[in-house]
Length: 338
Image 1: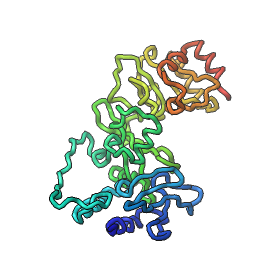
Image 2: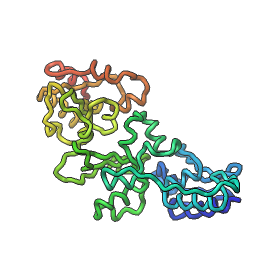
Image 3: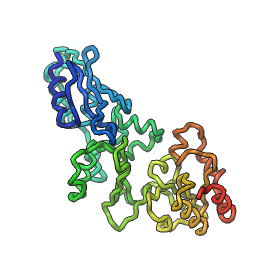
Image 4: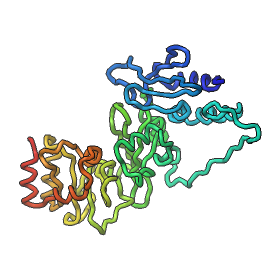
């Protein structure tokens, strides 16, 4: 009997855009993982379908796919808990297999770590997600080192979560999407800002908000040894591939008051971006070590390099392309395209 599955599939109606039943055991809607097309609001390429005795989710746009159980968990955690409980109480496991009579239903109280930041305790760490969760799949595709997965979080409804801290923001937005949450911590480990990164083509792609207005958006302060050589990149995700690395995320590098001789700055590979070129020249003026990208390299940043699979030794690459002083000026001149 799949009546419980059918009940909860129908309860998804209000949680999924353009939800409709195509025929028996097949439903269609806009994919909540990638958002489908943002140019064509009539596009709906997400499906729930039945295979043997189980229901599954599949998107024909982003290729996300998993069991209905995990899909429901990703779009509404509370509804999923009700679903699991009802399954057990009816004598079914997730695969609709009867539970042996002699096995009593046991509910083990969840164990929570003491949260360092109250707001983050409402979210799931990427490291705690099931192996087939779309958000974890995204992290794996970007080849982010597993040792950093517990620094990243998933918000199933980013705008709703953000309104807990910014009650006046996003009030006119009716559609909410899951986003990757990247917290910015100060040296003591307290979150003072965060970035919400889209999994699909949602706009804006990045949303960075400050909880403490006077603090600059600098990522990685809580894990940096300022007595050692410090690396500085632009994006938080790029910083996770380099030891002892900060991300300025739009902040002024000079505000960090780093020792230039023991600091290497790595800007994105944007030879046609006038602002990037100007910042590189300023960093050279301030005596920083600056990485200048090869002119024939198409990768736009460190994460792109890692994902390409062509560069196994990132630190070796950085060392080989680090310049300062007159040599840096000459390399930038060869690299820039403006």
